[in-house]
Each structure stands twice: as C-alpha cells, then as structure tokens.
Length: 374
Image (cartoon, rainbow, N blue to C red; front, side, top):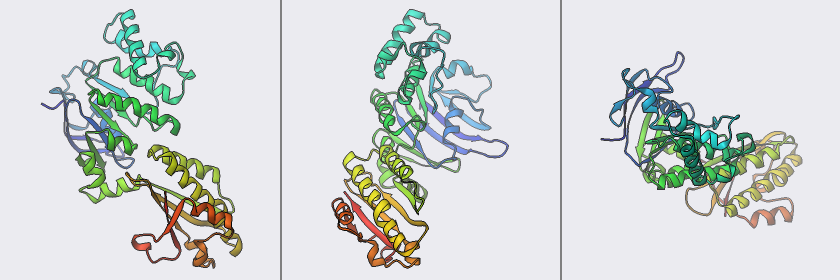
C-alpha cells in the first residue's frame, strides 16, 4: 500500500476552484517536487493533505486512513504530517529551542528534559545548535526556516510537506535551506515540496508533479519532466522558469533593480559564479553603455530593448537575446546594434561572449541580437 493515495480530490471556494480532479500516489521514502504556474492549486493540495483545508470531494488516504472521513481522528493523523510554511510561523515570544520543544511536549506528552535533548539534537542536525537560546527575531530568514524544519522533525512525522520553503528568503539564504532538505531526502524522509527551485526538483526529487489548472497534468522522474516532457504545457513551463526577462528603459532605467533581479534569478537557478558574473558583465555593459548610446544618438525614449536570458540545465554557456525593435523603428541602423561605440565597450563584451544568430522565428531579424555567454 502506498503511504499516500489521493483520489479525485476537488476543492472549491466561492469564486475559484483551485483543485478540480487530483489523483496521485506517493510511496514511503519518496521526495516529490510539485511545480507549475502560480494559482494552479499546488499549495491548496498540501493544505488539503493535512486538512488545513477541507476538500469539497474526493479522498486522501494516509497509511490507509481516509483524511476526508468524518470519523477520522484528525488531530492524531496530523501528528504524522509535518508542515513547513513559506513564512516560518515560529512563536516570536519563545526561544528557538522552545519552538522545537513545543509540539513534543504539548501534543506527544514528552517530558521537558527529553524534549529539550531532542530539540538540541535536531537543531544540530540543521546546523543551528548554537542558536538554541536565541529568539526568532535574532535569526536570518534562512536560519528561521531551518528552525521550522527542526520543529517539523521533532514530531517524528511520516511525511513532511514543504510549501515553497524558500520563496520568502533572500537569494543568499536559499542554498542553506535547500542543503538541509537535500540531506533529509538522502536520509529517506517522505517529502512533498511545492517549489520554484528547479535545480532541487531536478537533482533531488524521485518524481516531479507538474500541476496546471487544478490537476496534475504530468508526473514522472525528473529526467522525463525536464528533458522529455510529454505535454507541451510542461515544456513551456520548464523552459520559462529557466529564463530571465527585463525591459530596458531610457533615460529612466532602474539599473539597481535590474542587477538585483538578475542576481536573484542566477541564485535561484543555481547558476555557477563564473557564468553568473559573465552574464552580469555583458548585460550591464549593454544596458548602461551600448544601448543608451544608441538611444541618445537617435533621440529614442521609453522602452528601448528587451533582454531575454536563457540558462540551460546543463552546460557552461547561456544565451542572451536582445530585442531592439524600438530602436530600429526610431531610426537606428541594425548593423550598429551589435557593435559598441567605443573600444572599451567592445572589449568588455567580446571578452565574455560570442555574437551568434538567434534561433527560431528571430533568426533573420536584424533587430534582435544574439549572444552566447560563457
């Protein structure tokens, strides 16, 4: 028998139906990553699994017990299901160690000394034993989420649900939380993870669920989902999350926001430092020197270009397309777009990239410049 069986699960709200007909099985020890566009029911599915939301219809069997049966002892079943939320949900007035102790002492009847010793062990497991006597407000976001994971582990759950556990974190803190989750997967914990971290889904999961329009549209091993998806919707989604887009305005460009957005993208996609630096150098040079110089020369204003950066799952090169149709419409010579107006600009970009012809519909479009960065 599977640890979890979901049968024709449906959840309706007055104005929306986030879950229409969800069917799935999860085996003990599996790590399942749930991916898909926003608003497709991923978080609602997790909240139904532990009955934070009441399903409209269908069945959820955990260890053979139907969570939708009115006769089911929900408090007892919820003790088998750990939950890690986006925003930590720690008790601010309690010490870190007290947060981890709370469930075992209040719900499992564990003695305080035993709960304290167990909490210290779990905090050590997530690398935070030295923060046991701190308060949550003294921790970084990544540390708070690791405490939340330790708190979930303290209940000795049979399955742990992670609802976008890195979405509220600064990019620099994402990797420390993913590292803990990777260790848990290696230890054989059963985990369902709603995530936008595609590298985690690809490299750690046993299977990936792609959700769309309130259903699981495709389920399979990571290699299938990321390299040979069976549905075009899966292909488009997987491709889109590996892309970064930015519209460049002149003269009112917000370069700080652009740099921050690019850095966040590279961190969340686990782009290597060398390639991330190369992408940043090329894009900054184009955005701050080359394209503004063209715009000044012809009097163009407003959105003068659109950057689209594609980063493959494997490999050491990225592809950058720069759509310059507005500049061409304002009178720029397409032959000038691919070359700088001074030797420094040319040298910087040439040192990091090779000019290429964009693929697909834009292959013969002189207003679109293609770069291979690496």
